[in-house]
Length: 265
Image (spheres, one colour):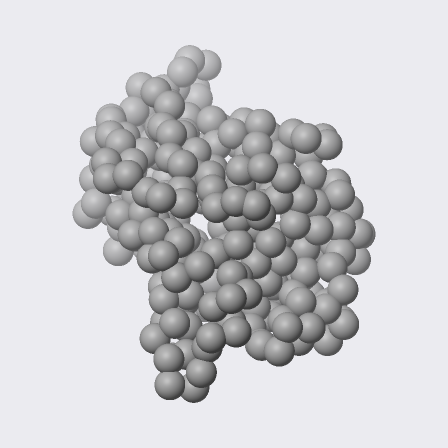
């Protein structure tokens, strides 16, 4: 695997890959880091053989305190289009990653940090972790659509228009969707979730990731019909039969290690 300047990547034997944002002092993201995120997550198999799930965290006190403000200061209508494309590509690479991505949030997840967290499949956060969209306070816009994956509309608008962050505990109480860990335990808890995901069929997990991404914007009837078609396709796969046999026989399943990509569409 290639080396990254601002990402720390570690894979364990079970197929759980831990990716840590690593740009001191608070993991604020600049152009180079956006490119690295897009590179890694758009081809997560470069992290090692048998990747099954990713845990995404941040080194140090904060998950990610936002975008590099020096780059905001130098942005113009002329150079902004290309810069914003790079930002989108990084977020979309996380949300469209071939395997599930579990966010592990401590400290601050603000602006870009919130968008990165919300691009994950789900988020484990420490009780006092702070989520916020301070864009209006620094003269820019964006992030509200990502926050809408975690919080209902009126709460998104409150957080956007005030710029005031909420703790993970308060975000949950007001109707947001994060899983709360023990203080200091977000990374360990996310890895426990990751180990659970990694225990299932690699083919089934990757197929499920594609399916969930596809149905997110579908209506109920269309989405469920799409899922049912995937069920029919997967029913003939050896891992499907093995899962049922192992459940009935009360034993650990023995899934195929190779991934059958014919089950993804």
